[in-house]
Length: 324
Ligand SMILES: [Zn+2]
Image (tube, rainbow, N blue to C red; front, side, top):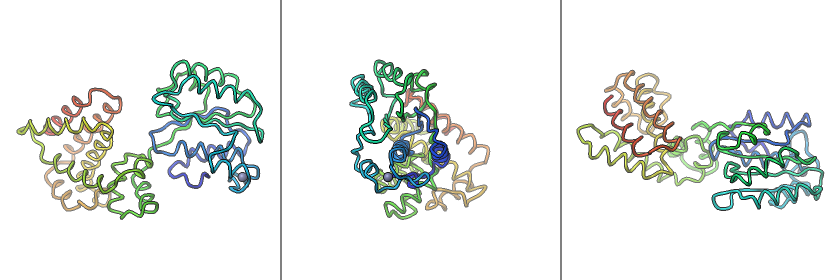
């Protein structure tokens, strides 16, 4: 596991490798970003580099005993903590505290990777805070979380925060083509749907995603205020598919943006396989009405992310879109 395989996070990787070169890797790091942007992979790469016995520059050698143990997930001085059930519990943090109180088993460093740190319950978070306040010598703690606001401010303030940006559809599509041998058209569709998450794209049933995109756009294009029943049905079915809601909203947002691009710069269209349809629809809309529609969907994306009443958000969004 090295930094080389991490895509789309150049800023984060640059920060970490520079800190390593200067021997100033912070004792507590907080990686934030949506799932599937490489936070855990980067944490593991950093742990590997810190533990490697013969790193060349900022690249772990990959062959020393420490590297071998990291690769097989068996390095005694690299500890993983992740939610057990819905929470990270106090017992897990106590175990970490006890392990950190001992000297490292092998080298002189210990690394704890705490994924989904926002899942710490309040007891666990308070115990963890005590470790952060007096980190044992040679210890490194790497936390991952969706967003800073999910964590206790007292924990955040003791960590160096590094934001992991959502990946562009272009980067995701290239990775899908190379890693999963998917044709470029399907990869483009899945990359839009993935909404910045490479992890989600790599795990998705891309054929199903492509079929669902077609259905989604077809239903969307037939909506009208004169057929309120089917509009409300559409809102309900989107709301019920809650795990994919943000993805589906992104598909609709990109669809509207493509229609806008159909008027202004067709080469930027992402749903390239629907080029003819896009051009035909874009001829019927004005730029200003498309811009308003895009804004309406973006507003719904923000509201949906904040987890408010999904069905209401969608009903309001669709009615506003039909009015435009
Ligand atoms: Zn090594």
